[in-house]
Amino acid sequence: MDNIRNIVILTGAGVSAESGVATFRGPDGLWEGHRVEDVATPGAFVTDPHLVQKFYDERRAKLKTVKPNAAHEALAWLDAEWKGELLLVTQNVDDLHDRAGSRRLVHMHGELNSAWCLACDARMPWAGTLLDFPDCPECGQKYLRPDIVWFGEMPYYMERIEAALAVCDLFVSIGTSGAVYPAAGFVQTARACGAKTLEINLDPSEGSHLFDESRQGPAGTLVPEWVARLLQD
Ligand code: APR
Image 1 (cartoon, rainbow, N blue to C red):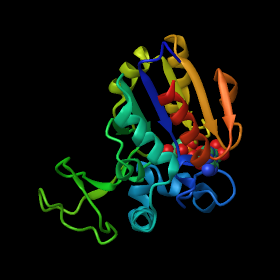
Image 2 (cartoon, rainbow, N blue to C red; image 1 turned 135 degrees about the vertical axis):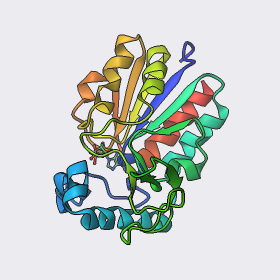
Image 3 (tube, rainbow, N blue to C red; image 1 turned 60 degrees about the horizontal axis):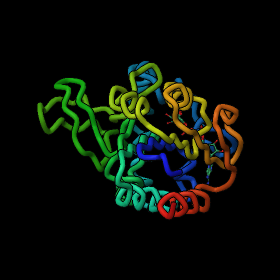
Image 4 (tube, helix red, strand yellow; image 1 turned 90 degrees about the horizontal axis):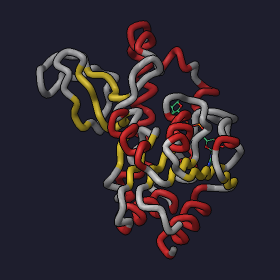
């Protein structure tokens, strides 16, 4: 641990599971109840915009009923204490890392609490519903959509993420199945740039074999343990 200065952490739905936010894959996962093509593609928004808005409105409303868990809090503590470079890259569209206090944070798949106007291209904080197609506060038109990166769209902050991966000494993946690129490929980029790699996940993920070390168990237990050890060292 002596040589570690720059850290990149990738989180997925598993980090929020113990807060009561549904993951995507597996039993009870969001993609068990919905077809990805029906709610998470630009084509779906053209075909059935009401279904898409309702899906994200319900998930946005759910945020008001959940709170950060021990894993989010430990990562915020690490952010506050770590003197080297640190970037927390989340695939999650919930706001639990933000509410826990993480600051060096990017939401690569967008945020439920943000809306994007397809007429004027403005993005704005949004806590209410979009199903009723409200006026855009910027331009007055009714073309607001969830500010979520759908399948077939380019994730946000890729340049910043690639730059951080290129100089990191440690890459840690937490609570993600490794099923969706480009995030699933970050471990290979980090390795190619010389970083040590650690996975923390409830089950073996699709990419477990790519990591130097893979720890299996709940993030709410394993992440605070890992952070405490890292800060102690
Ligand atoms: N602690 C740690 N890991 C957990 C926990 C937990 N308490 N509960 C579940 N997991 C693990 C599961 O074993 C699974 O491997 O979290 C992972 C969640 O995987 P997915 O549901 O596939 O979620 P994620 O990897 O974030 O999905 C990536 O897919 O559909 C898209 O855009 C969506 O950002 C999402 C992307």
